[in-house]
Image (tube, rainbow, N blue to C red):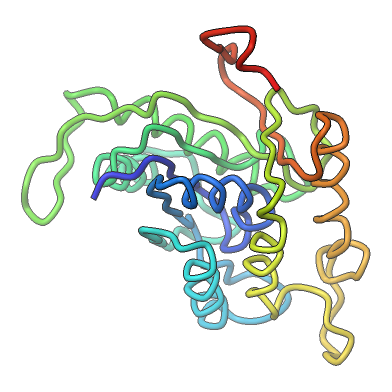
Length: 238
């Protein structure tokens, strides 16, 4: 199966928190979307890897993803090395996405910046035909996505591109809240974490609202780029 967009996250819920609106919007337009989780989030203070596996599956249904995979690298300890790069290259060549969305280039959690560089490097290397990989015993062809964009996470990085997601904020929030083990629930007496507060839950929506305000829409998501964004016509800008 070929995907139009593959979103890559260091942890289950990274994608939902940061770019679920874009995935939902493009899926509604007939694009095929997918997610690759690098780890199972096993070091998370709340919940377990097994719980997050189920939450990720529930979120995938909400976003109507065409594919979701997890390559189970070591949460907190994965490295940007040949072994990890090859695991991601196999997924990129399997789904041949036009666009890859990946972690913020700099963020509070060390896995985010590291995952960002790992995914970006794998996207480049995937286009080199002398790197050999296989799927189900058959050689894979080289494939390089046309564009790699980095979504914004904990830190308020200045976006290079802002995408209108008006009409899809409710679907995004439903996908986020599929991870009930991770986010605000006053009925649970579990350990508090930076993302389990009511303030953080509300910040997801008000960040999208603020980015929307800045471009004249109701809600938006922001991305940083690796090369100049380009349009065919100046009128393509909204």
